[in-house]
Image (cartoon, rainbow, N blue to C red):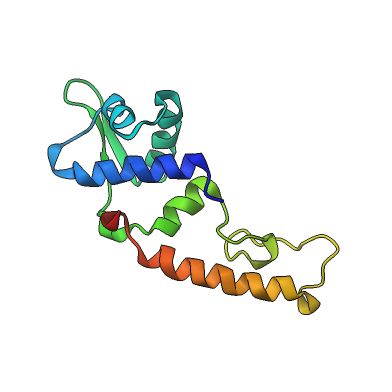
Length: 133
């Protein structure tokens, strides 16, 4: 399930895409317009800044703005950054792989089905860009 953190991040990013030609946007404006708790949003935007998706300007006329072209950032990248693996089991994750306890991947029907689920999900999330929100 998509975490609130990822949902809020995608809402905030969609707002910044919409306002990208207006310069830096105050965090309070994003929080108000997208109905996101301010303290929660502060942490999310800092993570996105650390990942170099956003940047910020301090002082008068300051705020957050996109640091990348929204057509270059997939929804999968944002979700992985804030939510972790997209796969439903660690043994099928491409970026966060771990063996499942007490499981043999070679004889696990669930493993095979969830690889198909992962691939179908990634096909959509990798294709969709921030500019399409």
